[in-house]
Image (cartoon, rainbow, N blue to C red; front, side):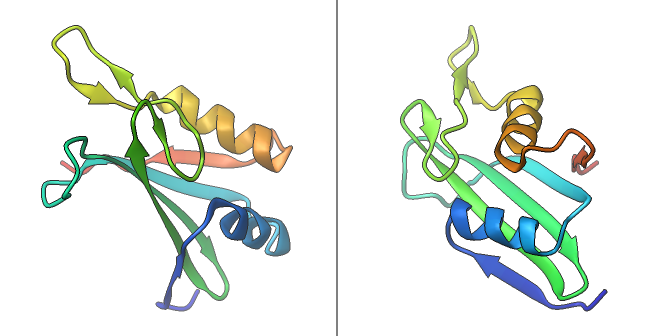
Length: 109
């Protein structure tokens, strides 16, 4: 795999790249963007390794959902906003119409 990072701007472009490359694995990270100009800082970082490089999509929250994917942003009992791992995995499998993909969460130490 090349060390090149390919920044993707839309979910549709990411989805088409996944289909084109017949991608078998995806990695995602759920983050709180500290330097975001928005009040809500929830971000989904979706990554797809391919022979052409690492494809990357950043999806920022917009109210109660993410802008590109529409994945819900939930609110905990103390007002903290978060994304459920299962929502991300279910979304990818449904959108790609595949159950055989490997989807892993990246959770830094």
